[in-house]
Length: 250
Image 1 (cartoon, rainbow, N blue to C red):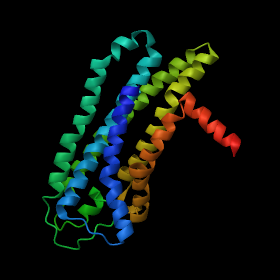
Image 2 (image 1 turned 180 degrees about the horizontal axis):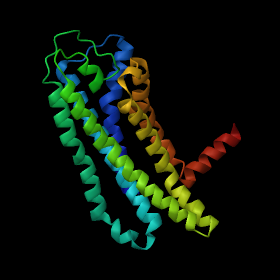
Image 3 (image 1 turned 30 degrees about the vertical axis):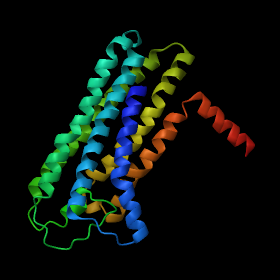
Image 4 (image 1 turned 120 degrees about the horizontal axis):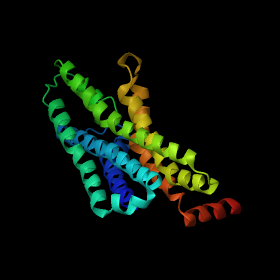
């Protein structure tokens, strides 16, 4: 679990570095521009880290499934080498998605207004500035989103369905509580990330306003990465004791 958490930490550091510094600079300067190449680079790394996180969260769900449903084989199944392969696949999965999506978007001619109606270069607001037929790209992007978001999400749901079935069959209340404690942090992080990302990219165009899209994007690009360390740290006994002491003093 801690091996995957280290990878998740590096992913979210990269994710935040791509979005937050430029966003803060824009907010402070009120009208800070971003170059054409800078926008392309931001979009590329946004796709890269976003896709990698989807697959890494699925790998973490698999880790929790083996730990609870097949604990005796856990040291062999989730040894260092298989875990390293899962992490490598998660990181590399973002590369083809980011390359194809970014290169295709920036191959369109941009001859209209040059103002992106968003706090970072995301594909829908950038596509609005293209003066060409983008219907084929939108179809490809929708299929890619289904594969990148829905496929790992289904793997997570399948893992937790098996975990729930195993926990229900447990006779010990202590065992059920321990199993729930093992999965609660990851399940909360998955719900926050997949929930906000899924609503953002699967909503019907007619019902999507720029303001609501910005708010939803803010939740999974800034709020969720900020909450993740807190969510996972609260499972640590020393952290919980420190929080309890602080609340008692208050």
